[in-house]
Image (cartoon, rainbow, N blue to C red; front, top):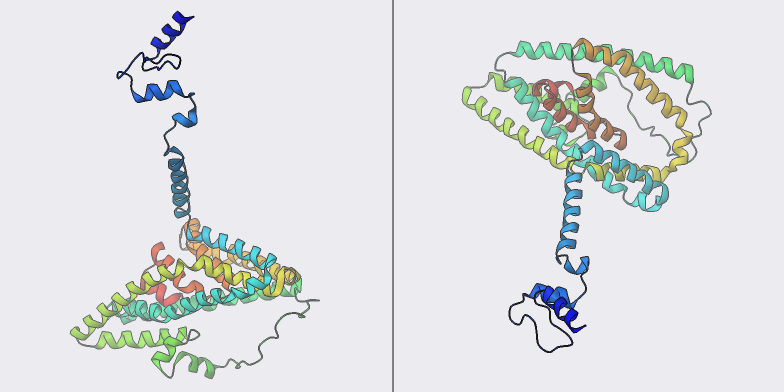
Length: 354
């Protein structure tokens, strides 16, 4: 038995015999072998102490890279879903966070004027004395909008007369409609186009057409000015336009939060039940919009030889923002930015989209 014990001890370098005070490998054994012999071998004990921390760090890194790869459209959709859940299950809290959505819309509104003005000035005055081209662009834009808008009105009138979505709809629980409006005439339209003050037009988010008018007048004046003044103003507006597009990118980082809070406030204030009651009206609207896209817009895109998928992808983010905030102004800067990235010249995008 002692021979077995002795041979077993010699088989493991650095073993210390607990029954014998004499070590078989005094001074010759390493610390690892002594630790292994005196304590049971266990994966948890043999594993380096920092492995669990490395696993956690790897997981956090993976999640971080996964979130960074998500597009703005994905984040906006996620914000809308979270906003719907908050509005449904925490309506009082949803109403309180409504101002966060209002802040997002105001951030958009405050950059629309300088963005449209500077981009349009560069687009028009940057072509020098070629004002005939600007006139052709304006004529084509007006003609396109007149024709396409008329077709959209005809399609909408046909849809509402067939479906009659407002029949039996109850207005109880909804805010009373605003009756304080001005009748649209040629005089009111001319007054809306020509502002009383240039800075007043920039500060009024409803006066985008007045900003366009001021930009056209300013561009024509730059084209007629001397070379020094013309170069200075073109450089200034080019710098302003570039900076405003950077501001748009900064504001868009807040878009998922703003969109989520806006839709949460709407659902929390009126409830999903009130939205479901208007389902026939909403359904008619979106079916008609789909028919408009398929019957009118897609043939125009194909005729102009635009890539349909890329065009739809470029418009997805502005569409979601306009849908969630119920404001086309919130989508204007992003639509201009995406169209320029899509390949539309900046002067045409600035002139046509507003």
